[in-house]
Length: 265
Image 1 (cartoon, rainbow, N blue to C red):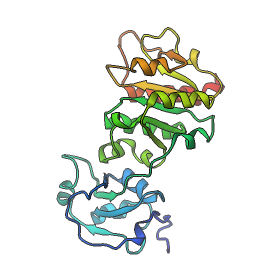
Image 2 (spheres, helix red, strand yellow):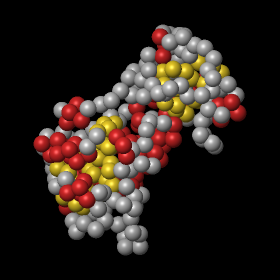
Image 3 (cartoon, rainbow, N blue to C red):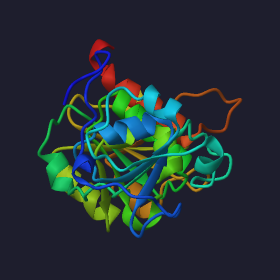
């Protein structure tokens, strides 16, 4: 397809689909994303199967690339787009309906680059937090995030908006048994460090030179006892006594930074 203004093509499989007016309701099994970064990243992800894009003319013009011929696009006003998303959601003139990403198996991650850390989330259910963690994981080149399927938010617009495109970049592995997944990581040579405010050792003291899995629990409750028991070490971030704890997404970002810079320490 010809390029315009030097912009790259938007990829994916949506070009094979035919257009048509939508009902304004999410289709069965569909994921609805909004906001320029989330929508643009999904459009550029060849693993996404797109169903339909509702957009303002300004929203389409803001995209870094062109839609394929035959893309299912319907122009709409800002007030119409607002009816397709959560209340007061900043859609930025773009709302995309697409299929969820295909499931990824833990073995596929463990067979990858061992120098890239894995982030394990134990019952972190707030989509804003999981989205922010995905964003940090992308920034610091994490191999994947791993969650328990029943205790994690689904793909969706709030999470994708918080992730700012990282949902399409960072592999997300959902497992049935998180303790068993940690055992598989140990068998693959990963050192599992659980973040816990009551731990004696700091994260930098517990950080080895080899493969690392960072384990974080939900705010308030922290890691469950069984998950903490499957960690090789528990460690804390050395924060001021003036604060009891950090937001889980902030803690994840600091730990990932520590892993990324450990060779220069």
